[in-house]
Image (cartoon, rainbow, N blue to C red):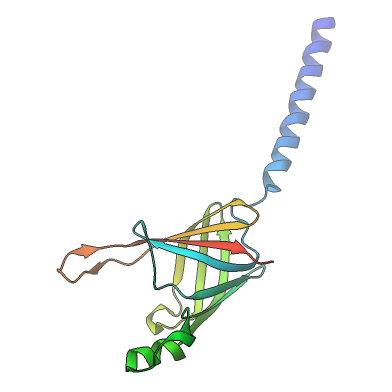
Length: 163
């Protein structure tokens, strides 16, 4: 009789612990917590820091994103060439909706400087190792470089939380 009671107690304990574990699975925080306002700290493409990066902010609400960017040190450009003027006067930005699933963030682009990207779903690997840093890793489309070789770039955007 004691064995039957112990077996029944063990089954009840296992059933309760399984139910608790299952209920905790659904409430786990996403692997990538991006909601907030972010400042781009640096951009690394193919292992090299991108020196042409400007100042960028990215705002992530519950379901929408928006980013704005401008050339760094625009006030120091000499404005002697058309390129200088374009760099000094250009801003960029875009927005859309996004979803997070595990370590993947998918942005559905509604406005973007490159018209062919409008309506596109843009997937990136997402990591928020702590609550104040976000690594946003994405791969360019394949393209032919200046020597005619097909290539694909890997870009890691390093963001720091502003709020």
